[in-house]
Structures are given as C-alpha cells and as structure tokens.
Amino acid sequence: MKSVLVTSVLTALLLATTARADVAAGQSAYAARGCIGCHGAGGVSVVDTYPSLKGKSADSIRKSLTEFRSGARQEPVMNAMAAGLKDADIDNIADYIESLK
Ligand code: HEC
Image (cartoon, rainbow, N blue to C red):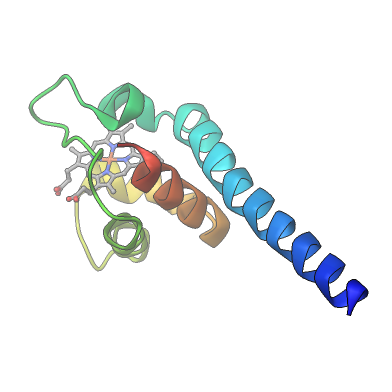
C-alpha cells in the first residue's frame, strides 16, 4: 500500500517535470530557431505581416507546423522554417506557445 502511494507520487512528479521540460525546451527552440525574430518575444509580433502566436492552442500550432513541414500548407518562409523541425520540436514549441497567457 505504501509503495503504491510512493509510486503514484513519483509518477505525478515525473509527469509534472516532463510537462515543464517541454515548455522550457519549446521556449529555447523558439528563440534558437529564429521564430522569435518574426513572431516576437512571447509570441507577440510587432510586424503586421507576421501573425502573433500567443493565444493559439497547442493543437492549432502543431497542425500549422506539420502542414508547413509537409508542404500541405504553402508559404515559402514557413515551409523553410518548418523543414528542419523534428516532431519533438513541434510538440515542444506548441506546448510553449499554449503556455503563453
Ligand atoms: C522570416 C519570418 C518568419 C520566421 C523566422 C518564422 N515565421 Fe512563422 N510565419 C511567418 C509568416 C509570414 C506566417 C504567415 C504564413 C501564412 O499564413 O501563410 C507565419 C505563420 C506561422 C504559423 C501559423 C499561424 C497561424 O495560425 O496561421 C505558425 C504556427 C508559425 N508561423 C510558427 C513559426 C515557428 C515555430 C517558427 C520558428 C521555427 C517560425 N514561425 C518562424 C513568418 C515567419
């Protein structure tokens, strides 16, 4: 019984740590890959031609990036930006964007 409790607590801690790690990794990738240059710090763009990302759900960011990467959605800049993203990068960036409130 006691070990079940310990295991649950450890699992909960692990899940919490994983969630934070994704957001932190997403924030780093967003800066390191230059997204911040167009979409702005904290996902708020200061240039009209570049959409702000803040306020969008992780699902919508994931969908957009996957479609830009595959070419299903055509836009030369974003096709090039998304080409080098791995699935994990897309997940992390999507989680980071959703965390911006
Ligand atoms: C050189 C400028 C530039 C850079 C750098 C850039 N983007 Fe974009 N991004 C755009 C433009 C322009 C659009 C609008 C494309 C369209 O709607 O056809 C866009 C659209 C998007 C969208 C879709 C928004 C929506 O809901 O329609 C997402 C998500 C996105 N970018 C994420 C990223 C990420 C993540 C990175 C870094 C890997 C990045 N962008 C780097 C210019 C840029």
